[in-house]
Image 1 (cartoon, rainbow, N blue to C red):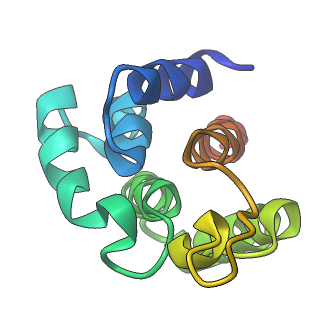
Image 2: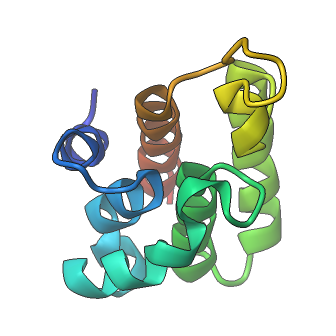
Image 3: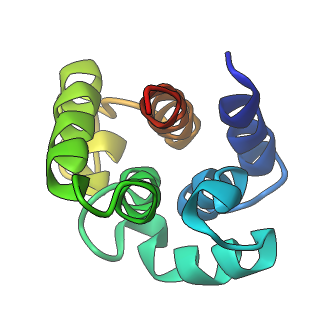
Length: 123
């Protein structure tokens, strides 16, 4: 696992929300301090906006890092994440309606951070 993806997983192990774990690990890519990243990530946590918070955080980073191609970068990110996990939606990933989780929160953080780190390095 790459350096920033590792940091995102460590953040999550240290009780950061899924979105804060990812956004804090990539704060520099988004032009934020780590503290600012935690604050920006707060509304994304826990599926409050429908999508997985780790996905929303990654998309925030992509939109800041690649403003001219954010739509295509986010679409590519979403496709890869969905191919890995069958959904982008927090409730579906957690199995809230079915009782059968598709992916753990830590797994979503890992996947989102690994995809994001690769995409940011392809510049």
